Length: 319
Image 1 (cartoon, rainbow, N blue to C red):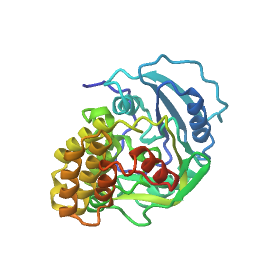
Image 2 (cartoon, helix red, strand yellow):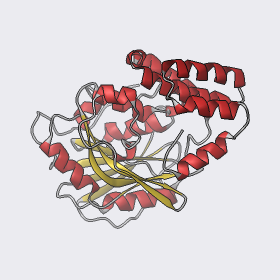
Image 3 (spheres, rainbow, N blue to C red):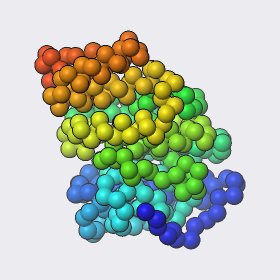
Image 4 (cartoon, one colour):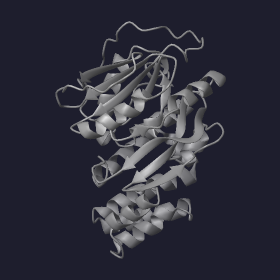
């Protein structure tokens, strides 16, 4: 699917950190959460203009009247691309008018100083492809800070480990890269699951990824999260991710991690034999892959995947 884009500022390699940032917020029927996300973005103290683009996925626009400084503008548009998170993000990317693009999910929020710290980091290291931040995982009333990587992250690092602190609500990238050498968010991944990981892998393939080592993005985990229990979608999307990135075959630890997630998904769906078979494959790749052992517990009905997921979320971790 193609789109024509509005006239934009050229990125000729010069410092663009003061030229403006477009913040893309995809949303669907969660306006109360959306208002919190808007407040966090609007409170960022940066000298450049900020453009907030709220992209509605399958729902009409509704009036929004947050109080913003004059340098912050708010636009609402409707996703006309593939329904789902990936198409909604891409609609915002293609509509953005500033040379830098940041993501924020509608149920997450930015801490004051988040964007300024990222712009400082990008200004000091113009070679990077993406800038993230540390996060605070909020599950119920329990916040868990996760600092994340201190130095550069390369493709090999991300093949071995997803590095959960590099969360999409903290992503800052060049618009020219998203429309060019990195590419848009993949709309073919089932249910848009792992679209952020896929984008990270593609970003790291063209340049290092850096992160501000401070928890400046609050990530809220709750039962209303889209992927909380969509196990078939998770399994199928991860299969496509492996097909897209054959480099995983050369990284046993990383391949075991993905297969472990798939095994847990199969166990959660009650497909016990397939789950146990895939768990054995995980252990042959890496005996340290904990998801293989968790799969056995779920497949043998010694613990439910919901209880396991809830326990991990309280620790600020995911499956």
